[in-house]
Length: 95
Image 1: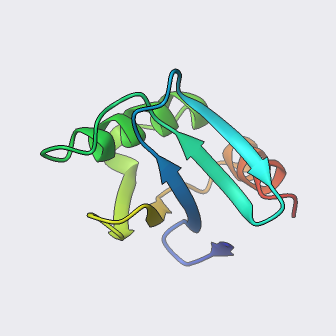
Image 2: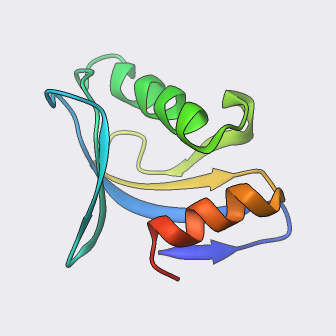
């Protein structure tokens, strides 16, 4: 899911912790993000925010987990209105 809001962009995807490397994979069901961190004490969530911050070139403080703190199904709010970041997100979700 990809939805533009007043404060940024909402994205929904599946996370896969304990992966061999951090990466974004497009599947028939949507987007899957693999993270090397373990899902213990919020480590995977923290690693996810750090990875997406570097990937989209936005500050970590601009990324908020809105839904799915303890689930593999996540919804994040990326607080940005930069055209290049929005283009990268659109490309990631094929919109």
